[in-house]
Image 1 (cartoon, rainbow, N blue to C red):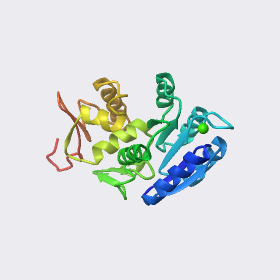
Image 2: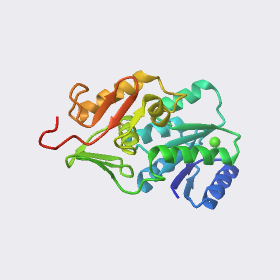
Image 3: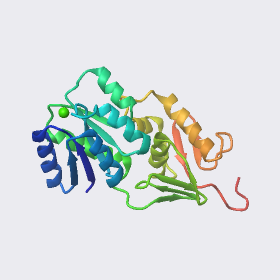
Image 4: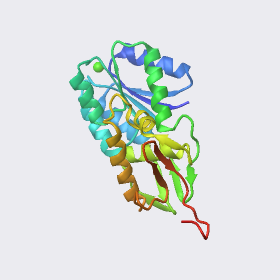
Amino acid sequence: MATILLIEDDFGIRSAITRALTDLGHAVTSTDRGMSGLESAVDKQPDVVLLDLGLPDIDGLQVLAMLRAVSDVPVIIISARDDDADMVRALDAGADDYVVKPFGIEQVEARLRAVLRRSGSAVIEGPLVVGGLTIDPRKRLVKLDGIPIDLSRKEFDLLLALAQRPGEVITKRELLADVWRQSYGGGDRTVDVHLSWLRRKLGETAANPRYLHSVRGVGVRLAAPDTSPDGH
Ligand code: CA
């Protein structure tokens, strides 16, 4: 079960989505205006936001931009605008997915499941702990040895994807699919760049890894540092 905020001005679509998602056990709050949607997103901290682009008071892309300034909540765009430029603009502005109207409710459900899976809120309850690292998927908070670390959205998602399978080598392809959505990802280089930023924030380097261990030609593994007296 997830808490979902639906921002949609079309009454028919709004009630159909609300009914379908409530039937699945989700808690749905809805509004027909962008500004009140933004307020709800901040106040209620939903697990996912479903956002229409054509709203009466303010364009959905502006809602998205303002929301992104204050929140990492996953956002799925639901829109009749179906040209590539709009989709790219929405994804660049921080949307997690895009569903074109008219759509079957199953399609919204499937995207919702995927987004919840990626953000970890559907499966993970408490924080994940790897050595001195604590990763809280619900609060999207990371601490290293008790000290909070400020991570970007993608850095956090990357760390979370690795922390869900500690000790396991995860391929860049998997990370691209999981964190960036393959269709939108820029390739291995995207993963490499974010890994290097993440390393810097964890206070380590590729040459002297503590938590993030690259396996050349394969991928990367997150593991607790070796703290035994004769460890390296
Ligand atoms: Ca609309």
